[in-house]
Length: 302
Image (cartoon, rainbow, N blue to C red; front, side):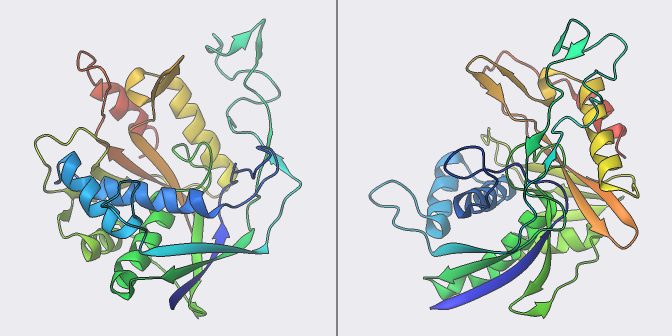
């Protein structure tokens, strides 16, 4: 069976747990789920029906006609730095909210959301092994994994810079990516040729008129920071300052994951946010998108 082995390094803390829900652990289903998400996000030119049909050819599906996945994943922990913890809301310091007026989590002057959570720490290393049942998907799968490592992450708070990782080696050969937006656009087009690079923005050129799911609209790279902690704090503070339903919410059973997805890139100069704007797919057709709030949030990072 054809295999692809990819060695990775953790860039920002990963909040991902095993069976007990508490002990940090890298999980193959979470990685496969992240790859499935970005595959869907790329294919905004498809209707929902077409999306499910094409997706099942790679990832499999639960329907009788959809068949099994064309690959399986194994994760080998090379050097996992556990035992530590990190603040998922890093802009909340010393148990106090940075905002003079407090925030929606403030009770009696103290921010109840200012806590630390067990995580897989920065600089941990792991290897992902893909076992291909269908060799024809090798190039697509490899490029999709590279894309997932750039745009996405693993575990909780991935849309606010956590859970990020970078690729060190592919099949024991050193791997490097210049992380320029033009290069990322070329990577997207190696899978699906519907993106264009213009004015420092990667844009989706083709959208299905009925696509009401979170597909990629544009991708931009923001201002550099010399530390991981500093950038995570900036992302968190910007999210706090521009809090709005159009940036995601959770109220009872009503939830919307943020359509502005911020991941983190690391290079020899420091850390940069990579900001992917997804289509905002509200459950209620009466709700409207506040693009000003979305743009204000992105503006803090650009």
